[in-house]
Length: 88
Image 1 (cartoon, one colour):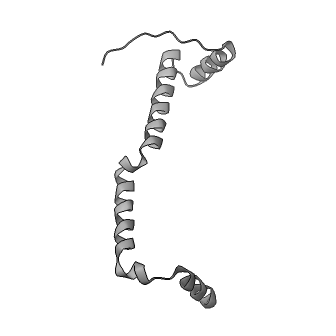
Image 2: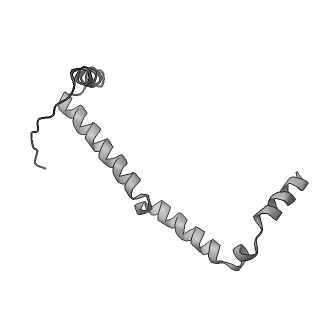
Image 3: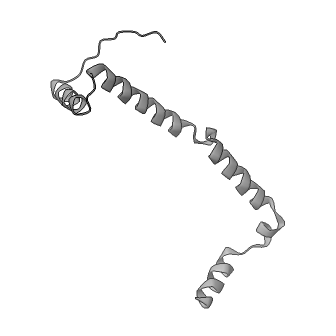
């Protein structure tokens, strides 16, 4: 994998905190910044496309199937809650 060198402007206060945290984690400044960018991109990607997660797609399929079933069409949630409250 190729690498590119970049220049980034960071406020002095933020740089001090970055360096201190990198030191505590026994990482170089570059390693710390690479990890921070990787995590940011991962979080951003997961927020922008949650339905790309196979577990979420499976859950959506199950819910759609249940919603389309005859049982779901005749199920009364309010009635079920009242019944449960009476029994407990």
